[in-house]
Amino acid sequence: MRTAIYPGSFDPLTNGHLDLIQRAAKLFDKLIVAVAIQSTKTPLFSTSERVSMAEECTQSLGNVEVESFDGLLVNYVESRSGKAIIRGLRAVSDFEFEFQMALMNRRLNTDVETIFMMPKETYTFVSSRIVKEVASLGGDISFLTPPLVRNALIQKLSANP
Ligand code: PNS
Image (cartoon, rainbow, N blue to C red; front, side, top):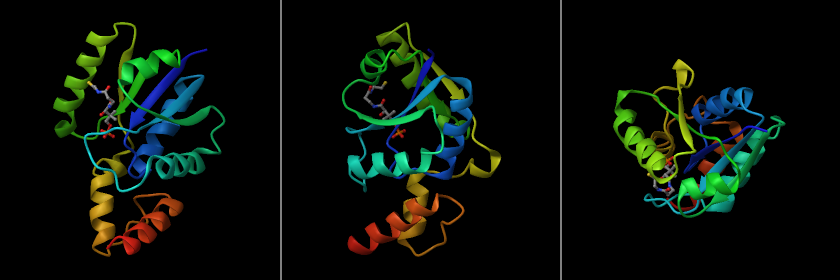
């Protein structure tokens, strides 16, 4: 069985993430969406909130599972017998960081490949950061996130203005 891991902060999951999950799930027997517990960024949503939103948004995809992970990504990938790490590339600006991360991960574990995938053109400008910023300023994000994420975001922002 070929398993791929799609890691990220998913704070929160966007339509761009979902598009990539659907594409990657077609290429592998199993896709694990891996929500990073420790991240250099301070997340708006707790780990369990990020995991449950991702679970609800992917429940129609039979070969997709959602888990959280801590520590080095390559160790987690190995613990799940993963063959590949999936990362999204939206624009050239993503490339430098992604390139650095992919080569470092390869250095740490030569058995794990990183595969870059491009989301649908409509989502190339979408990021969790932009979604949070627009939502916090009262802008419409309905075309950027699944409805349940939008509702959770509005609720979270009204509780933490
Ligand atoms: O969605 P993000 O924030 O771009 O995801 C970044 C993430 C979580 C994939 C990255 O920070 C990561 O892999 N963290 C786990 C710790 C680790 O292995 N760091 C070394 C990567 S070279």
